[in-house]
View (cartoon, rainbow, N blue to C red):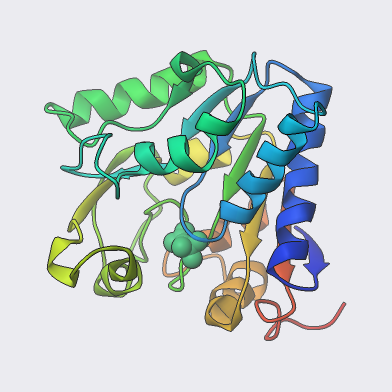
Length: 244
Ligand code: PGA
């Protein structure tokens, strides 16, 4: 695991965007695994600005998102499909047909989850997988538990995740209780992984991801086994990690 220290959120966002931009420049038809949440918004802004400046071309890029709330249609303003459109896809020249987010309304979800994994594999797996990290160490919506689940699946969100995400809904009762998420195997199959984190609220999770035991109680800890994982985090998120 390689840790890149950023001064603050803006610096983290610029550094993360530069890494993704390098991937798109080196392989214009790359497959990006993408994430939602507050953390990547600045990264996506920087990517959109690079596109506007004529420095990036997304016309051949394919994307697969990590997760989606169960029961939310893609046009719901809290769905992750909506988030991706508003924060990135609407601002760059990506072909929306090449962008994929699990369908929150999938009916036969076991078959649909298996199809999602098959589609990621058929695309050649992610060249680069962007990840945020939950306060509880989750990646995607792989919540702390007894096991690392391999494929895309349906999860019950933990109380801590529901609390953390309720800030974006009118009331906590509106937060969906379940979600679909890429599994740990699907994430680990990416050729490179870029984790971004900022703020003191992430400090314990970042410490456990980088230095804790590799255990499903901190799902992100499995990334210690990934051969090409970069963590870009600000000083506050790294405050419990040893200074290198
Ligand atoms: P956040 O979420 O970026 O909104 O903090 C990260 C996550 O839960 O993966």
